[in-house]
Image (cartoon, rainbow, N blue to C red; front, side, top):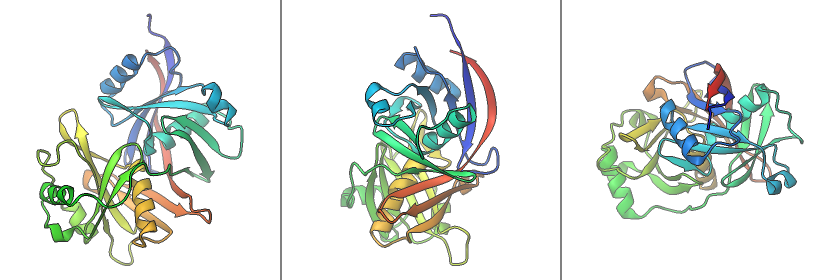
Length: 285
């Protein structure tokens, strides 16, 4: 198949400042591409995720979907991810996409995801957790060992699986979260989300870090929508966080990610942030 010129954006998500958030590659016309071609291009970009925009399926369109997206990270396709959801929506709107209803409705592997716009920010409705409840104690002990902290420093823990199968642990403080130097050999194969409360008076309530298996061992994600969505459902539900807060992520990587969390009157958790376009053009694919 001869390469076709396709519209392309590279978007920085969960930041108002270019190059301080989490970058995302967006191919705005993924029609006719095989799964293998999508995966190969994703691996080539060397970013944490790449998305491909497609027309909704007939079922998705009948249910109100504006577009369908396939989300890839190095080595695999994801049924859902947060920063690709907001970044793809930003690129789709910027390219002239017009939602059919009040919200943008994205179709992806977990089904339909609503995205609402609020000034400069947009927010997605957190999908239901696939798995929740406390982690096995053997997992908690392994995570403590891999993070280099005492077991007693993990003050709470839970499954935070909403597609990516995050295991969430809370440490005593944001300072402790920032000081982590995890051992990739101990944590091999695990998706770990770590959260710690900020001291009073800060502009954010929590510091978050996300570690997951990558092509070359343990990777850290700059800012993670899926993890923050699941953490919010867990922490708010358990009374460990207020119904509205801001989380910082990426500080340890010289990023400045900000994730805005709000649980509305219906119980839906909205996960929001700003997105900025850094590159716009065409790719031959």
